[in-house]
Amino acid sequence: MDLAARIRRTAEREGLWQPGDTILAAVSGGPDSTALLHLLRRLSGECGFRLAAAHVNHGFRGEESAREAEFVRRLCEELGVPLDAVEYDLPSYIEETGMNAQAAAREKRYAFLRLAAARRGASRIALAHHADDQAETVLMRLLRGAGTSGIAGMPMKRREGNVELIRPLLRISKLELLQYCAREGLVYCEDSSNRKTVYFRNAVRLEILPFLERYNPNVSASLVRLAEISRAEDDFLTREAERAMAGLVRREQGGFAMERGAFLGLHVALQRRLITLILIYLGVEKGSIPFERIDAIREAAAEGSPTTSVIEAGRGVRFLREYDVLRWMTGDAAADDAGFEYEVAADVGELAVPEAGGRLVFRRILRAAGEPLPSPGAESRCAALFDEDAVAYPLRVRSRRPGDRMRLSGLNGSKKVQDIFVDGKVARARRSRIPLVVDAEGRLLWIAGIRRSADAPVTEDTTRILRIEWQDDTLEVWRC
Image (cartoon, rainbow, N blue to C red; front, side):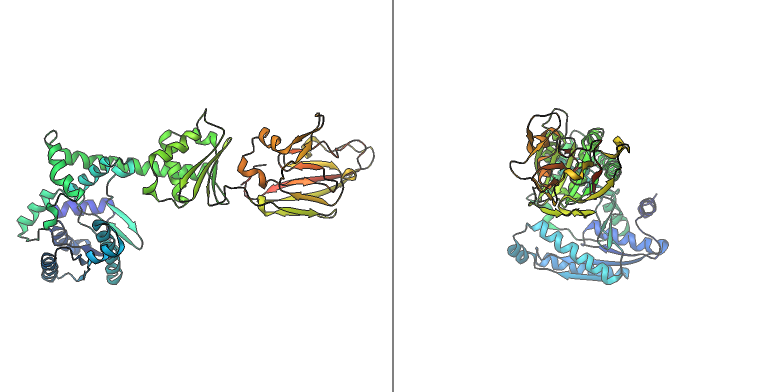
């Protein structure tokens, strides 16, 4: 099967283009992009797409760069392919920005390619990366300590803004492209900078890969195969992480949370991927999340680790383990909030407490003598009953204060609210956001969703019952 037929077959399998598309080919003038342009010109008629080209002169190599720009102009003219070209003064740009040469060149090049694609109405930009480039990329990332996502190498296609970057030659070797140019009588330019081992990629190509080929002549093919396998497994893990995110993780104000038991039920590979996905959702750049940070979070959730912990995850994101709940919060969402206080008169039916993400509902129940008391189900962790005649109005709903204490049934005296929170495994970062209901005599009647006091109990003599229920909107503080 000739090269054009192989590329067409790959394009059909991978969905690289569709009839009616306009494809913009990035052409430097070297053998790879020259072969790409020629092959796409051949395929454009039979595949039904329009072809345009773009060339960037970075201004690094003076007359040599100018000759390449002129060569690309003449090549496109001969092939009848419309061309957009630009010349930059990259050395000056690098001096102004302090960027390294390769990063600056890539930034400018891709910005112009997107601009040219928009000008030509192109939905896809074709790049000339081939199998040898893929092998180099994988080896470079291995040497830098990349994980599965990194050694997956360059994708065959990738969405970037309004365009899709496609690499039709990614399974074609450099040798095959050179042979194609020779058969078709195609001339091309040689970039002298490709022989300078000061660049890491050139050192990999000219020194490291030839050394490894002494032990495995097919090392490049092995690296390309590793990329193919890793990309499929990376895609599978990404999908599984997204499924776990949808099913196990809940959104809260300022971040996300999930149950520790659900997290520990995942395979370790999925745990790491889920942590990464959550951090990305919260604005941490994918490439800036070190393995050590991900594993520190994973280990903080493990059995035998402290029941409460905090880890700075980067970019203002904080991970918190709060007993059996794991949280990822942004900014100050993980910190204690400012205090709050509201007054509740005897006729109030509902009070919103936005600091806690919910509301208190007050219901008055009249009970005639001899009527049965409310069933045990009327009172729960998030609903408490009081003898209203024993309650002094107005009530105060407020956040905790130093020294707060509550009288408890079966206990002589009172107990510190701080100790009640500890016994109830309420995370430190949440304690100041939980509403406390206090009556006009200063008695702490109820810590909403946590515990009621021994004051104002409902008895056989109670004729007016006050039922207070906590209804939370976000599940951010605690769950009822």
